[in-house]
Length: 367
Image 1 (cartoon, rainbow, N blue to C red):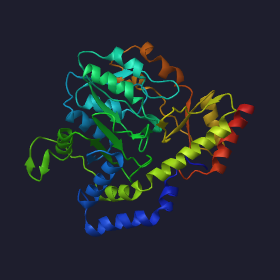
Image 2 (cartoon, rainbow, N blue to C red):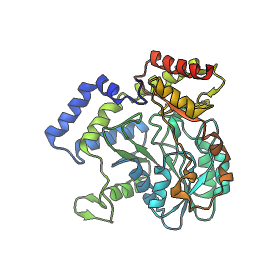
Image 3 (cartoon, one colour):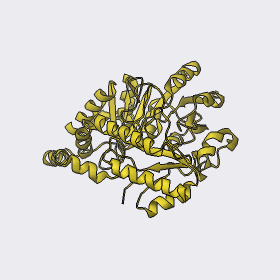
Image 4 (cartoon, rainbow, N blue to C red):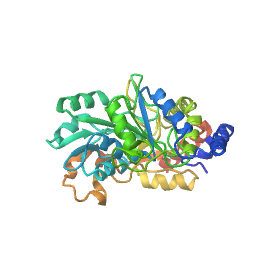
């Protein structure tokens, strides 16, 4: 069986470092906050190249806290892409604002910068570009558009740890950015974890207050906040893993190139597109495939796990039936939705395994 994601392989490769990190936290009983969380926050801020990293419980909390830090709430609108995980739009609703969906690019799956402006109204306060599957959204036109209309830009980097545009890391283009460290991510914890990054001192303080019961100093509650804190064990694990992130991303990029070589002559399959100057870190390796569902069943019969990211575009979910946007506004994402299929992708995946996956795809279409 070739797993879609094999987290055990990663753990085995750095077992001693991870076990030492966990043991240190237990020995010091630094379970909530403390030096291990502070160390990770400092190291990750340095890695991204920002002044502030505010850790929190998970990536969804990170988006919600970031929106609240921007002062977004009742009556406001926030533009989000049609194609992403529900956390992005869900967080908008949870702060009392309205998510407004905007179409994506056919070959890159990220939000189409040229579709955004038609959705801007007097109530629009922010744009949330999602760096999807490891590929950054096209940030230059997005930031220019935001500046023109005086909108905030909140980058959702949950799938783009280490992704770059012209050498500049995802998470450094907007006013504020969020990350998830869900276990399967390029940088993943051993449970839920997330963070917010920014260069803005005021936003950093607001996010810190909101995430920790409205306090910077214990018992001095400046506002009513919430409880969304990174625990010490996750902080220590993430610190241990962070030093490997660039190497792991390079291996993902190599694996993507191997996939391309083995798949390039299969007419029924389109491999992920790349953009000059953009560093795609392949959190997900998403192809477009004819007869997608039958292919998926065939691969499963051959012992190959796959996934679909995501079976329905956000506006098609029952959760958003109440939003009055026409399906005609999302033609591109609707068009490719039936064809997308995610193949196994992780640093420890071998060329032999990739060849077997691609040979199985060839076999399916040859029949």
